[in-house]
Amino acid sequence: MIKQYIPNALTSLNLASGMAGILFVLNGQLDYGAYWIFLAAVFDFLDGFVARILKVSSEIGKQLDSLADMVTFGILPAFILYAMVESNTENTYLPFSAFLIGIFSALRLAKFNIDLRQSDRFIGVPTPANALLISTIPFLSEKSELFGKFLANPFILVGIGIVMSFLLVAELPLIALKFKDFSFSNNLFRYSVIISSVISLILLGIAGIPFAIIMYIALSFIEALVSKNA
Image (cartoon, rainbow, N blue to C red; front, top):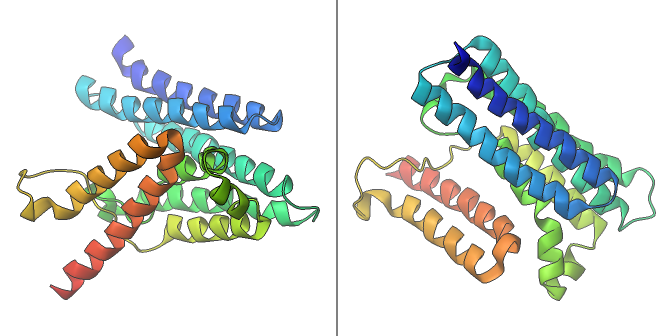
């Protein structure tokens, strides 16, 4: 039946988007690298959504999804960060620290495939969220002169790469945007994530994505502390 191949076709489009993004980054067009990540994220959502709607799944599909995510949300953001660091330093070796993003993305995806705790929420930052944060840093640099100067420091960029690499595999439960009801008291942190993200995007557009993801991680950390001490 044709329908069983549709999710894998969408996953393949995710993979193709990642390869296209890498090509643009190698040609110095970092903004297009981000655009391809946006498109890939849509395909990444649709493949799982369509698979559930059509009630088709396979082990090949699961493995293909991880391999596609590795390219699009692991290797591509690593190349973007490499290019950013390289353009701001004369040190030959420092840009290679960006490869940590690719390595830890692979560890993150492998961990996700065997970690049964992640059925209702993520443990550690998902690779798409990390890729979106990394890939939109150039937009933030262009949007704000203050942030542009701050992010022109190669050691700041390397630090971001190291921190995000750690967060990919950290034992940090992230807020699940799944509502059992819509009461404010039971969904305080979920609504906080949504509101802060919307505000960031309204005020800064694409450049607001790093702030939205940072707020998501911070609110998840606070929620975990509150739940632990409750």
